[in-house]
Length: 147
Image (cartoon, rainbow, N blue to C red):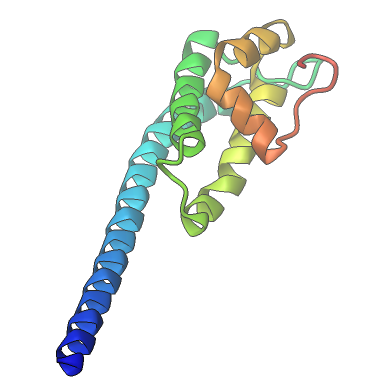
């Protein structure tokens, strides 16, 4: 009788452990798929901007003149990616570690070099998840222009 209970408890423990491992693996795989999908969407938008900036000269304030109609779709994509990170849909530290540096650099470059100074504040206000990710990851912002 005791042996049967021990075997049943062991089988239950193995079952729970197997479920946990399977769930963790599936969750991580989904986070990777979602991140890659979002990254592709961001990169397509960024590529359009980089094509524009490769033909533009730096202006007096150290910026490239990028039309806002090209810039806002990129920021919307980053804002949605930030939303997924902030709500924990993408939370695996290895997945985030892979995207954190390049995404932080993209955000910093968008704010510093591509967004006209008179529009930075509005961009910062309009995209709340973008703003929260900037704060969470301590991404550099141009001084004195944003809270």
